[in-house]
Length: 383
Picture 1: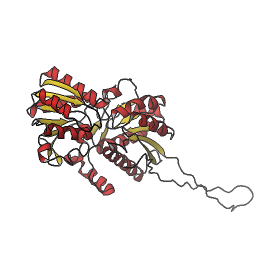
Picture 2 (picture 1 turned 135 degrees about the horizontal axis):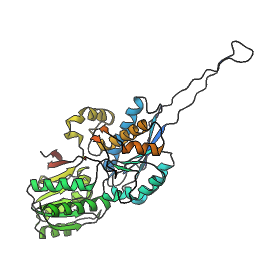
Picture 3 (picture 1 turned 45 degrees about the vertical axis):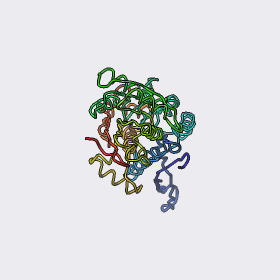
Picture 4 (picture 1 turned 60 degrees about the vertical axis):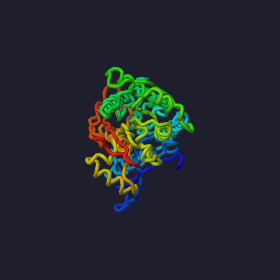
């Protein structure tokens, strides 16, 4: 996968100004001057390299599509839009460096954000610069901890996903639950929220909450702990690389129960090399998947016409983040960052993901989730 990238979609506006005749001659020659209107820059961070690059590339493509379609329609405030995208690799240190680079480009707003662990250390950087952050996919409650009024989460928070997950795990027959995370921001907060929800409702008995290490060669010890606790459903809240290996190890050790993964694992090639036996009874809580949403058919065709592939997870929210920023700039009537932030607090933008309205804390009022079920090498919508 490519390393850090900066993408731009801008059109120069040629301004012709005829100099009127003055002085002694009636027919003084006219001269033409041209100027290029500065583009409105929107900055973004995505994991374009690293273990989550599959999702980062999808986010980047969707954001680029939003910019190109806006520019084709005439731009905003009479100016073209430029996307300044940097790679955060889902790594906190890389994200900080990338954030500092993006800010130097004089951006009006921020869009993007996949891994919460990479987003958290950038919050202060953007807030100190007064830049409103429209976070497309990251949704850990850690993002709300500083209390910044510049942060807006398109996907709500992990609390909503945990509620959705627990309700569905009960519906598919789960009784004894083991929750597993990878120790990073989003997976930990989703795991904790899931445990709290299960205990509060009594819907499932939580038999264990376990931690595994990202990038390990195997997770057999975790698999054996799950089996020892007699869990009949496992909820893994981390990302697809570790989820894939955990499923293999669970099945290798004889676990025959259900495995549910959070949205960080359904967004990616989780099932690519799993056998039919390994992927049996594997589910996923997911955000938007255009394939399963007839109302996004026209948009999906536009996306595929540009990139040659159908849009997968991570695309609709990334597109919405850019269009929401553009809508806020338009309503603000300027690129003043405070005015854009104020416009976002009053948003009622109707996007691909539905109407986007934010609560006082910057979380979305009605986030949407789907339950998917593995069928061979792909997920289908569980009805």
